[in-house]
Length: 83
Length: 270
Image 1 (cartoon, each protein chain N blue to C red):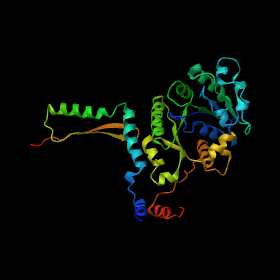
Image 2: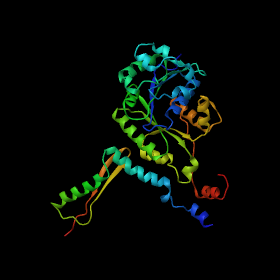
Image 3: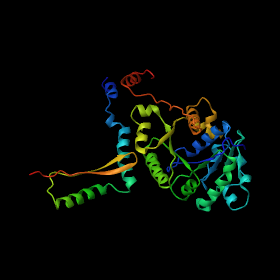
Image 4: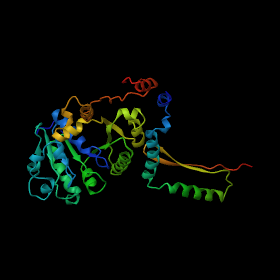
């Protein structure tokens, strides 16, 4: 009975289909711009270093790719320290 | 051969990854169009690894091949193999003992130009990969059909191919999803059509369900589109209709609602 209920209320997030979607999102974004996943860390480090030279940063900046259709943009969010 | 339209469409069928069903797709679509009375020619550019003659059941009729045409050993007309079922369908065979570098993009373009006055549709069966064979295949085409399977590696290769087609200035790129299993999509174990559209972002031309009849028809050398009871045949027929400009609704792979899940798990079929 428990298995039966579990199948009905199965968490979609854990299905192999959603794993496939997650993995494809990452891989296709990197394939399209011709980069490796290492790039994100490098970008994050260098951007922080550059901004921190001029203004004080509060917290950890976030760097993401956002995709719209077949186009990709870089989305950078840097929390700044208020006075 | 008598053309229906003054214009000719040159369509490359490609995928990046091998084994997704390019040749099966080409064989079925071209047969379906010929059945409707269009004059159609299929060029096999998978030189060295030819399959199209087998899938169409024409392997015993092949005399010359495309390499002999470009090397002047025979004329283009002599090399064309007439289909045994439809008078309007022809195949230009690949050479089996040569390789992809034995023909240039210009030579492929010249052959296409020579075929245009006689055919409504010229299909190019592209080899797997992104090397010379791919470049030859897209050189003469003005439209592209990308075939993929609902599977991560096929989708990744399809995405790469779409990128390369866009760089080559293709404006008309359409997607065929082959070998989908609606039951697996519903149970959350296969990428859905919507998932694939989200990743690849190109226009959908058709959805072909997995069908064991394809193996049987390949064994016999008879394209499955001629078997009216098969679900794959219905899907290929819909694609043929769309290629001739008719709007056909996509087959619905029923929605996975709470009740359909409940019924399925309780043993009721759908």
